[in-house]
Image (cartoon, chains in turn orange, blue):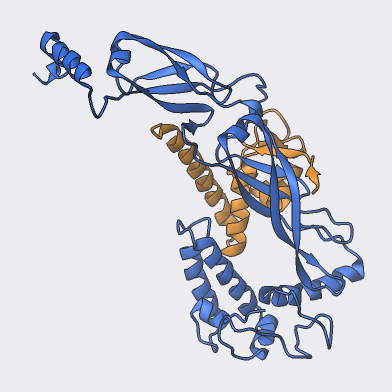
Length: 107
Length: 314
């Protein structure tokens, strides 16, 4: 059996990916991702430092998980672009609340 | 292959309009979508619903489905010769083809032939898997066997499910619920298109001694009443071998004793040599049956001691 030595990416808040990688890995188009960025639903880690139009924007790799969920919901519920920003904000809020909840769990 | 009654799956009549089909699908999707539903069977149910909807919402696919006639769900079934969905023409073999793939290929076949015409690269499909690992393996890093089937187009453009089996290295330092992305380990791309990716969810198998929260481990530490009162040095297991823990005199149930850097490695944060902590939770345990000597000593203590743990009751 083949032993896989392929590169892996940690999907968490400590690792970063580029816009190109977000497009490649989430199933959402560059146009939709730029729309999410413009309305503030998607925030790059270095947004204050670089030109928004450049390809130097870096995102926490955990964004991939929320955006993939968004992409699935968009396809399965045939959602319109205008509702995606709101949904991404809620998905991120749920993710953060679930993380906090895990921290409060009694050992 | 087994026949599937897509109308029954969506709970609509065979004469239902596209709007009625869409309405029925949306209602069921809200109920069973894996990103929305808490029902553990929801994912499988949603897959069936999505498969039925994908066929019935498309006029051409629906007509091809209707052409197959009515059969009970689950009945062994083979499409008739010259059926509209046959990608390979008359005499095409449907062996090893899933019912759902008949219709997936029906549209992909059209797309595929156009793409073949332009020789356009088709990226492979992404997959998502969950692998369960022991705490010991997560602590040290491990190799896991991954087995799943991927959809590939055969030479006639028909979708086939092909087993995909390989070993993948899971790095040291994963946490419970960690998600990893293995690039290029999903379905194969066609015409030079890139392979799909594999999203791997890591889930810890519950451990008989340790509980884990993020990078910290927790273990119950049973102590006798006299060890807790007088203090003691006790052996405590950790994932890196036993350690001697000094229990301070006057320890009570529920107290946490911290054993520094004996938790899980924080490798994924680039902190190669750092670990979480291990917390031993004191639990005072008394014998369920006493020897005569023990009983005598405890009775003597109860008479002479002035300690009242309920003094604050007033």
